[in-house]
Length: 297
Ligand code: UTP
Image (cartoon, rainbow, N blue to C red):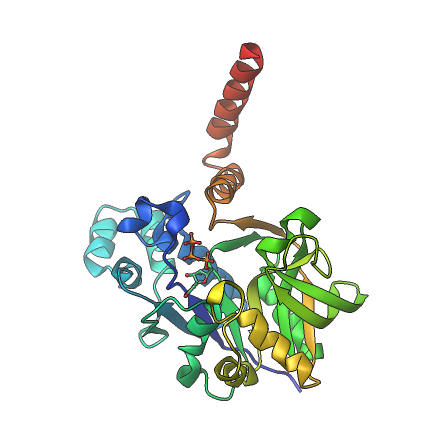
């Protein structure tokens, strides 16, 4: 039986403190990567994977994010009149159908797991995806699509995973691996932010998940975990304690941690270099500063 996944939750209620002072007034998800806000990349990936319902878990101060999804008929008219058809198309490609987006408030930043649980009523009894826009994945086949295809055979819960250096594992949720078969990892345990030197593997969980509706129930049963927050990892690991399947999926593609300044800058450069209209000018500039730095050493 094919298991359709048509709903995705985008938890965007975090405070984004690593980008202060910018995030004092600009939500992190609206910050511009080349010429589009970070959230647009996540939306495009979800659409490509067949997602039809987009649920944003937001918080105070995120109205710019909600405004971004408003259609802009005046702007469209102006572009049409001035014959800027390419820009018009770019703008139209970002339009979302009325009713496709829902906004739910997370009143207190009690953690990622809590943010996901805020969308519980909209999810009902269906499997769903969770996408963290901070984790940007450049891939020929979008990361979520790779996972949804794999999930057709496995069912259960599935998390995107990638190898990280052992010393970085304590910044992530980490998989305890039972067995591996190609990109598919059968999981026997999961630990959120393990203490240094205690990580069960170097396979870290990143911000793409396919989850069963039972995870919503688990979120109501678990205690606060790492950092005093309600952790999504713990609610997924709860499935294992009840004898149900959890898989990691080692996706193909390059992941950028856009929740950090260095990651955001790396993604900006990589995405700009992938663009025909920017590549030559940017690489000439990068070459020139590289040469200058070498000369100065
Ligand atoms: P982060 O751990 O990156 O936190 O959250 P943050 O607040 O966004 O950023 P910093 O660390 O202060 O710079 C990971 C994801 O979980 C969401 C965030 O919006 C982000 O997409 N999140 C986190 C929530 O929606 N609610 C929370 O209570 C915590």
